[in-house]
Length: 136
Image 1 (cartoon, rainbow, N blue to C red):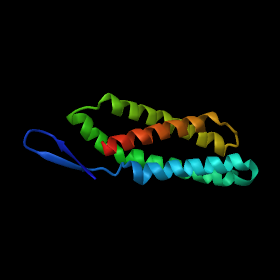
Image 2: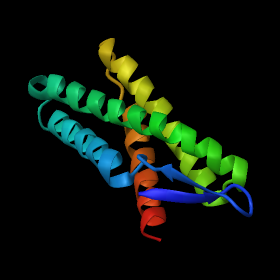
Image 3: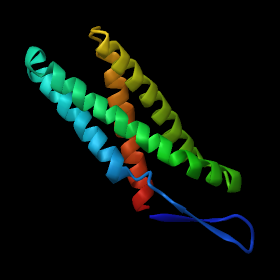
Image 4: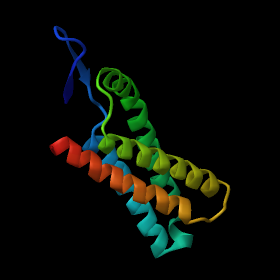
């Protein structure tokens, strides 16, 4: 998918948009839900699988964020962002920070549910918002 951005009245700038909901966000959410679901089934048996799935979800989200940074700079310099995008970005940042917190506490052996739940909730809302924006 490409986004056409008008930089002035005479010139069009095409930006490749790798930050796509389905390609990176959906696998990240599915991995997060799979790992969390298995962890709730048997904590002793699936702790490692939960950690791997959640870690891969965090990695995919990191790739997604890094891929959107150049596009965000271009879009904000041309026309700014509306409230929908600001909510999307804010929830994404909150979810990402919560995901990092859950990751760091998880690898240190501390069992906390709140950061992981916050990350999953924020990422789900951001995914739905991104999909709505994509199909609209």
